[in-house]
Length: 85
Image 1 (cartoon, helix red, strand yellow):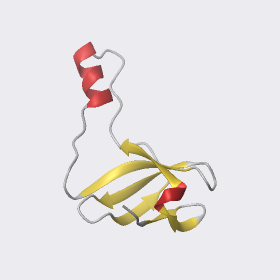
Image 2 (cartoon, one colour):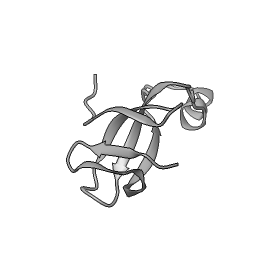
Image 3 (cartoon, one colour):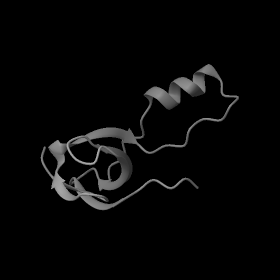
Image 4 (tube, one colour):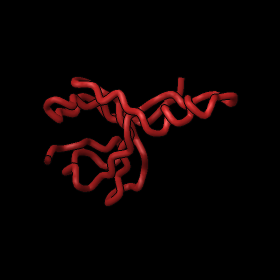
């Protein structure tokens, strides 16, 4: 699988410069059950369509950012720095 990914800092690069960090998901609260914690760590939605994901630019600026990628076509729709809330 090969596609282009645009780092918000360095610009467009081949995906092999990056490391996939998983789906963007809300972190469980302070009082979470072991079952919910396990679900957070191991269960994925794996949607067919646009999905927000963590990416790390390992051969560039060495920063994490968010990409919205269509998982059916690997088309990257948007990239941006993470901003909570």
